[in-house]
Length: 146
Image (tube, rainbow, N blue to C red; front, top):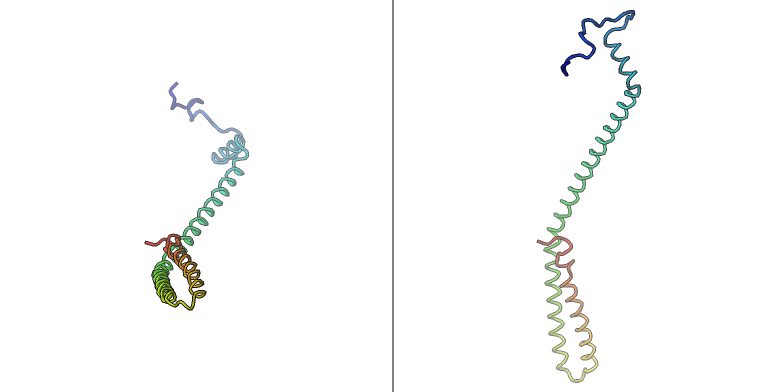
């Protein structure tokens, strides 16, 4: 027998006897007899597909919202970075002014205590200015400076 032939023989020899059911109804009864939980399985699969579709939609919405926030952050950094450059420039000018004032006060022999205190202030201010100028935040390292 060839693989494509019907193992039950010729279909014309098969006849329904004693039934009023249509061919479609008989096939449905056979399907229900072979796999009685098919309908429940189909409902479960459709529910899973609906939940998965909802999850994909939620992920897409979340990704779009994240994209908008990133764009806002990029726009903000474009305005912040020039301001940071001017702040760094101002801090350097203040340091130069303090250096000049310190040199002038060193020339006053009557103000030895003040000279010593301004030396401390100059040292502390110099450390602070250098820390701020070399800070990765002010140089745009954390913001994404270009």
